[in-house]
Image 1 (cartoon, helix red, strand yellow):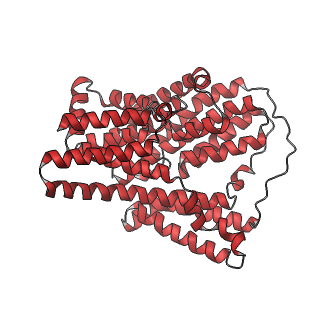
Image 2 (cartoon, rainbow, N blue to C red):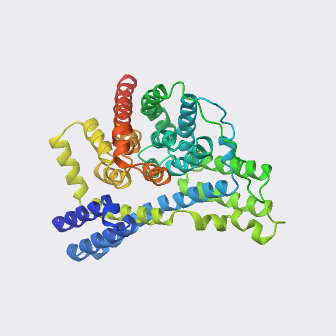
Length: 426
């Protein structure tokens, strides 16, 4: 049975990694993988009652992550529909490319800790299109935005799908991940940012006399209200969990209900055609359901590996052959440049138990850093990178030649910083 399950997962994993060359959406592969793995397990185990119990447990934990993501993604779409991100982008005023690079990098870094790195990347690259007319200039900016977004998401419990998974799973807590990983993530960004900023020294930003984009039917008050209320909802979720001890998805759904009610009251006097695109009903149609389906499929597939004992065997094998947790996690981070970090982190959560490695231990915080930032090494290694690749037509080998080395420097610099910091404080 184990051989069949491992074979199915390896083939599925390869198909997910080669999504673009083979032309099959990774969400379809993930669902097929989950179905096949649980079917093989059910047919060959001969214990329907046990499998039913295990599947119910897996669905419960998966649903918590999915509900949280749907709520967070909807809130972001509502903010964007009201042009709320102009609150941030309108504050950027500089004529020097090097200064702009630093400002954009740091804004992306902190914004990504509140939003997801994919949304932050899209918002910031859209801003760069307004500020920079030269396509070649925008390539460096878009690449640094990818690095900054991934680095920013790694030190926040709500900044990246993988950290959210670790938080909901009980492996990390919001304050501890900030204190533990913030410096490492900042170094991950600052190292490549310093090099690129040096290369851009003396270059001016060509002036662009383009009219500001107006959002019909949305006032400045409405824009600011929905921006700060939406952002406040996201930031308040960790506090809600601490105060009520309810799971994070309840906090995000509660906040989503508040935002929905406020939006209904805010636009109640407008014509239906005018307010339609500003409602949460419309925002729900704009969230990336393909990604949600992928998370469902891959998390259930990894759950099958966990319940069959495959992940435990893998953990023992790695411990026996490598022995050092830091080396194993660094290797996983490098692997996330090629393979999606969601299944990597899900597999790691199944490989190591909380009894052996309690919440906020070295392993989990280092996994959050390495899996979150390792995807920056290649343009295809993260959702943020793939989005930037599509928006700015970044060529894979251009990124390898110009950016991958810088991302590697930042990755190892941050990893070294975390290890040193951990040893000093523990």
